[in-house]
Length: 222
Image 1 (spheres, one colour):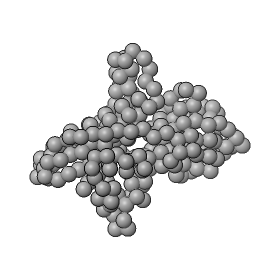
Image 2 (cartoon, helix red, strand yellow):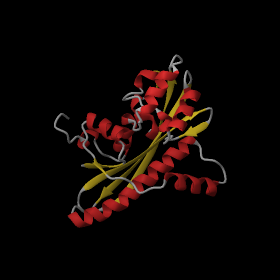
Image 3 (tube, rainbow, N blue to C red):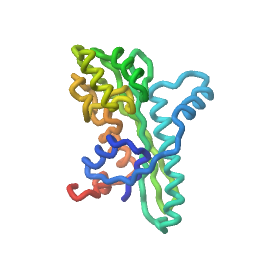
Image 4 (cartoon, rainbow, N blue to C red):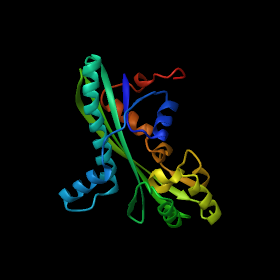
């Protein structure tokens, strides 16, 4: 059974590969800011972090799901069963949602705020089952982990970290699986949540759709 990953995140891909899964990656064509803004206007209130990541994970999965319908038709794979996974993450501190900073200046502002403190990383998941070439059942869940940052990070370390470019394109301007890991002193919750995809949460979603988790293993070491 194939897993399609509606993401081009290297961290999510690495996580899945380490868990024995080689997904088919397809970049979703979703304007995250527009989708979130439209939802907030419809509701008439700001989105909560939990609602934000689930909404965007669903939008990404559904966008790629539509593309897969066309791919299945072309390839004649209509009798196969596939799963499509969308994900999204945000970091929250002082009840403010922070996504990717994109610029060094914003990344530095984030780190000035979160140094020595604890925030929450929310990761949304949306899983769609494709059967006989048609998308059907779908399930979603949000995982949350508390992240505590070291209080002795000096300005030179921050400047060097930001200069690598790594924190510019990840939620909260930090990673746990790369250069940012030494600046994190504690995680409460599933560590893979902080990477952007909670493997235990994904397993529960797969099982809830009636599939065996090992049925996704397709790497030689699995």
